[in-house]
Image (cartoon, rainbow, N blue to C red; front, side, top):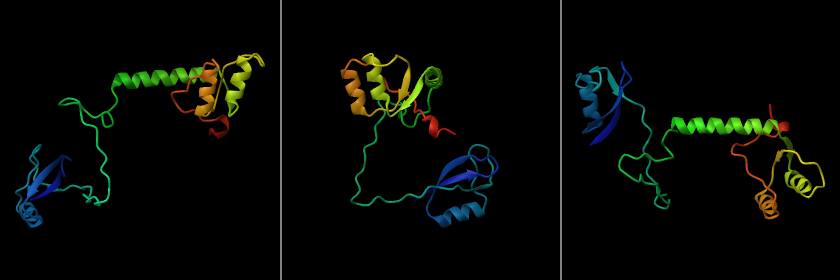
Length: 159
């Protein structure tokens, strides 16, 4: 048996067809025996299909996470819910507003944060770049820092 993805040329409906061979498909198409299950159109042809390539014997197959319950969708393929999209927009707006009130200090973020914490310079809201090790050091010294939820383009790199 061979499986083809078929497409109704009139309505654009896609569906599967099972045939004994490519010749059987061609014969049924020639005699008008194929029809779209949605609209009944006989103008049906093969749809473009992604090739099915065999995996090499030495390739490692990564396990895909399975749904927790019947009908549950995988998080990686599921569309974002309207509530989650609204929350992300709110978060992005809040970050944009906070950045307007803050000054970009680039790679000197950790040094500037320490200087403000120890009273060596005036306090102000800043944002910039720090390595994970620098961020951990700041937190260990009692200096409150937090990563931004969305990436920030440095002013000199912005259009």
